[in-house]
Image (cartoon, rainbow, N blue to C red; front, side, top):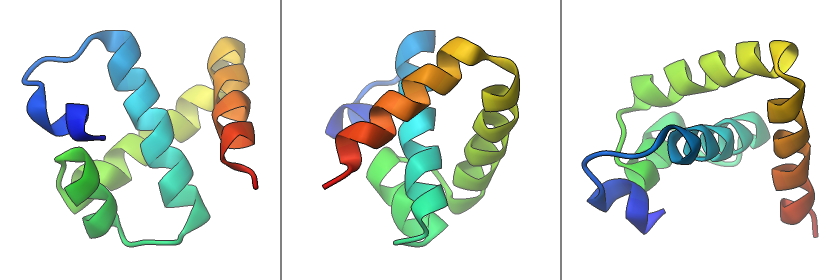
Length: 77
């Protein structure tokens, strides 16, 4: 997460991975959008927007959905 705040420009794949992590954190509802945004260097409204965009993409992109499932499986304890 520290890399998210330091880099001025991110690649598309990096941004997509970041947005997936934001979406998972948002979906789990364990923290506020403000707190998620602080971790990724975004505003609370950007967190909502990123979550909405990823949610829409997950329904259309099977590769993204697979990556999402992989990320979620890494977080299970």
